[in-house]
Amino acid sequence: MHPPDQADSVSTNPQLAVWEFAGLLLTYWCNAKCTFCYVYSSPERGGWMNTTDAVTIWRSLDQLAAKHGKTMRIHLAGGEPFGDWPRLLALVRAARDAGLTPLEKIETNAFWATSDGLTRARLEQLDVLGMELLVVSTDVYHQEFIPFDRVRRCVEIARKVLGPPRVRVRWWDFYKRPLDTRRLDTNEKNRTFAQALDRHKDRLTGRAADRLADLLPPHPAEEFRDLNCVKEVLQSRHVHIDPYGNVFPGVCNGIILGNALKQPPEQLWKHVSTNWHEHPVVSAVVAGGSHELMQRAKPFGYRQLEAGYANKCHLCHHVRQFLQHSGIWPDALGPAECYANERAPRR
Image (cartoon, rainbow, N blue to C red; front, side, top):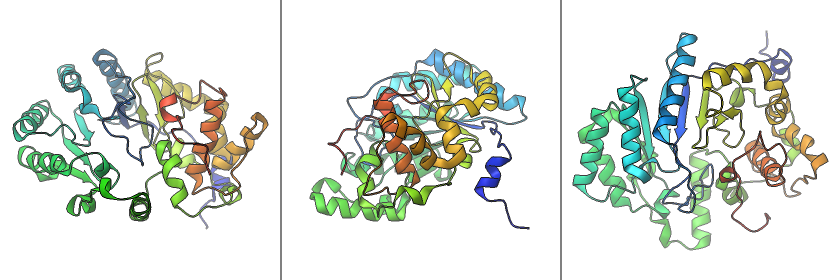
């Protein structure tokens, strides 16, 4: 027997997988303004999740997983979660004191690792509070903003404090051969970014879609017809929750499934599981991916790019960006931090 194709998988009415992985996006603030950012984090952004809300959301996620015989895995990210160290520390301590699932990992760009003493002190505190893993982001995009000596300091001290198995670098190849992209002119930088995209297939949403898509070969929208997103949206078992409580499926930041500050994730999962067919964006991308979403956006005035799109995620983001900027489906698309186009009109 041949495996069912995507059309067959949709016809069988796919079900929403139980969420087992959740990232709390504590803020949209970041000291950097990386070209590849999946949202539009920058020093001008804000929004911070407070400790009480984080603990409440975390507890409900734990309960959801436990009810289905699973164990929730929580990580903290942003933006840059170390941008407000007292808040981050208080949140991790509160979660530990509340008896919640141990913190799996924290993601950081290490901008804060300005001295050996400070770096060691912070990592030791997080170790005592039960953080299992530190993930340090470094690549040609981050190296445009983060002095590499801070990245190296953070990684080396973390390996001593936590042990090598509990330290990950995204990506090790860039860590071993750092490149100060601040010294490159525009053409050299674009070539460097294009090579990085070829080595690591980063998704094209947020600022990455606006800044990097032009570095990849374009394809007509028709090439993405029937490439549904069942796996990415319904079956990923993964959500992100931003500082405003917006719940996003998997890595599709900006598609709002609901709000965890208004409806506990345990109840929200049940609602989405039953009613995802009524969600204007989810129903479209499950049925026919970004191409179907484009078709549903055309009556609202969306015009496809004649030059084409880098991939299906680029098409999806471009359509959603148009809809969000136009005020279409405001309960399903947002917030502005996921869609703020910071560049002149495309192409």
